[in-house]
Image (cartoon, rainbow, N blue to C red; front, side, top):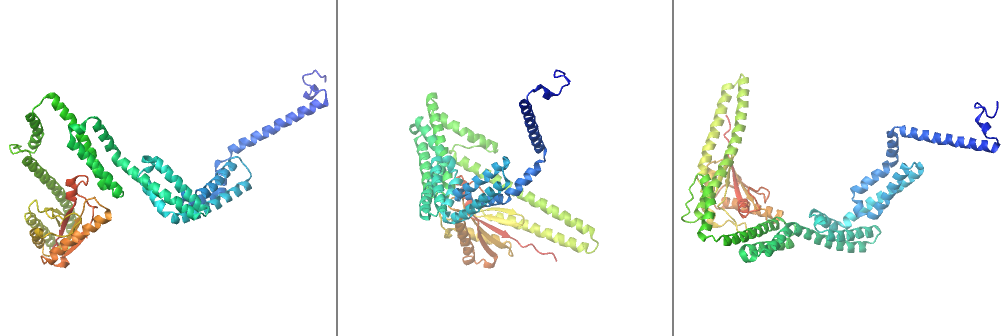
Length: 514
């Protein structure tokens, strides 16, 4: 076969042995590359679960140690050791992803696991040694100090981190010193954050008011806003953890600032419109007349607005009480109807003793009817200024609105004897009843202090009934609920006054069926 023949072997085109060898080597390299490509495709086609199972097996111990360290808050309390473990853990992740030696990965993970265990142990020690600053940090965090006092928060966090690292290295004295610094900074950050949340908006409003000449046009309202703001800030400085009072004061200051701005704008408009004082008074009487008309009343303003306002307030309170009582009566009726229907079905299904059980049912209904009559008797004993009477099931609730205590005191004044004598008479309407005296407070002041005060006041009323009015002690119990059961809005003075109360619960004993 000639060299130029198309069927001649390809090697014949390489006349010299050296070129043939090069071609063979190139072909071999192509085969190697093809083999690698095929292997790679096979690896890609392999189930992903195999890789996941390998990772789960290799990382199991280190992952558990990592979870334990995080549960102990080691990232915060033992940052150096925790970081060392995390770097090793991530290094093992990287080695696995690159397909490196399994033994190397195991060794790196063992290093990570040891570091996490050390970090957990160090964190448990730090949790005790640095407990004060840890609590302070939590308080600042709850106040959103990171958002409202970022610079102080950052500075405090740096001191805290330094304290934790010094403790890790065995420098206990240095750790405590830096912890004290961090605690002070966290306290400052917390207070700054609380003030920012409660006071900043009002400060901005007062600055706006000053720019608009409000202090000259509505000086009394403007000064009231400033005074409330100063009082709120003073309360925060003295007791930052009882935020109910300063928050309420700040809200009132905010309202008075907006009120002052409105009044200033109104005064300027009245001046520009040249309206008379009579026009102004009539314009403010009209809304009161409209409200009276909606209540089907006529506003008699010839003696001023006070009698009209008092009449409307009494009307609204009466409606509120009627609605509450109607709602309670409806719920009681529905419950009782369901119970009676169930009893009647049971009686109809039974053959023996039917008449006797029906008689017992009738007797029970009659007893409940007597309770309703007795309730009406009690309700008529008190004036609206003395007590409000309501029912809850068979229980009678007497809210002693006419009995008050001096601020922080628990002494029943002698002038309340007539009211408490009426209370004794009300309890005697149900001779076998049990009497519970409940003390309640508003939300101002600390939770524990309010709870203790409410208990003392309830005990004082109970003792007065027993010692002064001869109510048997076995019939009476007393309990204090503090601020936990409000019946009105604690953000208003009227609401807080309603929440500071003594409730008396009378529980009649229904006559048992024969």
